[in-house]
Length: 386
Image (cartoon, rainbow, N blue to C red; front, side):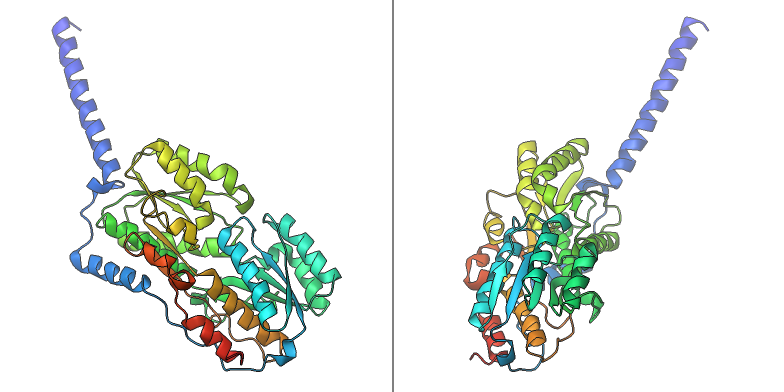
């Protein structure tokens, strides 16, 4: 090949390579990042905004069942085991349960643990050996992970109440291993929280990095709901995820988030399924210098994290209960069981979530975490205390 032909061949090759690279860049952009999609039509954006606005309001208390006599439960003892004591909301719910037990004439013991079956089993064994009347599992501990201990407890005549085990969309469905349970609106909650990200990007695609914790049943439910919501309103949004067990959040979340956002500049949303993952995830985002990356999802409603939405934590949505409402709902189910009144369906003794965004986060500093006073008085009226 002479010199002229060689130059011609190189020019042709360069032109083809440029076209290939251009095509790759266009395809990549259309499946992630703000500039690649046409966005949602105005009516769908308005629909999502309406759902977000409604979820941001103070929830209304609805009695889970009829009033009943709690006198037969007086003097009984409950043993409270949270998913992990290092999770602020779960820790506080457990401690609220002990306070409420004293208020209604019972007594309670809070069991400190770091999470996982290895943390829960000693508590179960202690409650059984000391003949408690009820064991209360907080924040949806999967009874199948401690099946022999749950069966031993029920065989010994100890009621096992699992707080926040299932989702309200499953109706009255409950796990046959436990005596009774309460369900919570996890799926609906995480949909509304990721809707905030969809609205902020005007329906244009963006990449998502999600931290799941599949040992917690609610985590599996929320992962599915999040993917369905994105599939419905942002089908070109890419979701990458990593599963990290609860005891490992403090040591593994930050490095996982750092690696993900370094590897993918199109990631705009980091979704810690549970807001106990917020501190390390936030640290990773801030250290990256990526001002275009925000935290969304974050089920938990931890007040100290919500308070920093407008400043220290790059978080644009958080959703969850107030710990006291969860405690009242769980105590209501526990009292119904221990007094002989009979448990209500799992989806009735629920506690609602409230969506927190940069628009309303300051309201979380109000009474009962921004959930008002209607629910405590409502439950206490059912129990004959007022």
